[in-house]
Length: 176
Image (cartoon, rainbow, N blue to C red; front, top):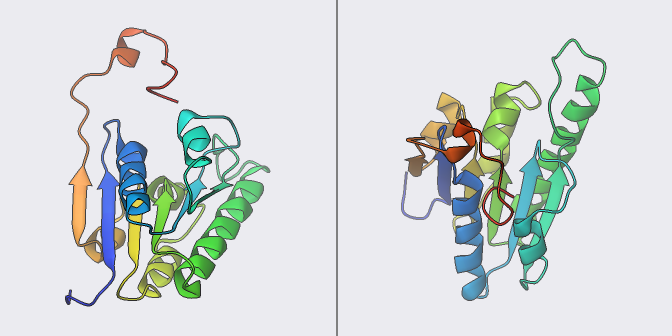
């Protein structure tokens, strides 16, 4: 990596906080007047705290390019999930090459690759289109080796304990 290469950050692992960390980068960038695009793969339309908050931030656009729970590849609905993910990657690629954004977040892109919605190569091609001033943030469990090697900063979130595993319900404002 050279000093004039784009900044590529990856938040991965089985612990909570990957999307939250990425949105923290978006918040910080917005505080400096930078424009961000967040493309959420896999996650389906629905009202979450982060979506509501981001709608109030100037210079932040969010695209939900997911249809929710991903079925088995042999299931007929899988093709629709794959198409939605590809459309999301196309939007990210346009943003990366278009010069209108300073920061592009590919939220849950790693599981999209792991589940076969996207290829590792197609994501790598999109990231490699980024110019030297661009910041790319990727999130999700099961980060493939090729995307990990593209990143200059990798943080692995490790689950030590989570009350959800003890039977507690998810909490508004914390899990969604």
